[in-house]
Length: 289
Image 1 (cartoon, rainbow, N blue to C red):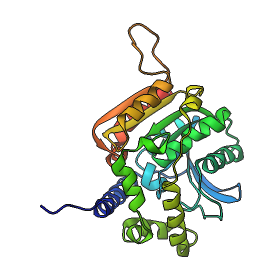
Image 2: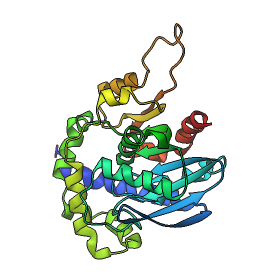
Image 3: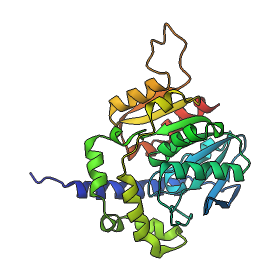
């Protein structure tokens, strides 16, 4: 039997992710109340706003944008909340700048956008890279974060299982250029010629070891809802450690239930979790009411 290479698997995953999520986001689109660009830390951050109520900020994953990542979720969230979705450095309609990518810098950008929009505090929802940015925001700008929704990510790079880390190490500009990622980039990016530089910077960023610190997380006051698939590429021992640091893992019949929550979706991968819109909203909305 022929063995499928890690490179081929990455290619297949990206195609499935982008094509499926693009269809979902377009089919369930909703018109923004407002959109624009915010001058923050040398960037012009693109953002969109939907609905009314307590603010919820959405942070997308690597190489993604608002519509692809959250287009299917926004309509339901916007029924009861003011939803602010943004595109981070180099992603979507936000032009890149000559600045190394880091979770600290990206979290500072989110805080800056919130200041620009006069949002004192909000629930922060992040997927994959965006989830780690959300956690970093809660640690470095705690006054800005009331709750964290942490979808399919890790607080340290070793939290990904080895096949995921191996896949990060194998990524290349050429590999990603032959996927729908480039087509979507070209449809939104202010400078289409910046693709190779952007991807190179992202690959470098994805392969830098990081650790936000379990002791820092134990001191965090914002409750966190951790959501992941049972076959997400995240080490389940890592998830247990993270949830325990947030006050979970107790004997709930003998003690008050923790403010933080954990949800593991069955038969779910890192890609397919964002396709389970109804399940995600059913977990998120009760947590943020």
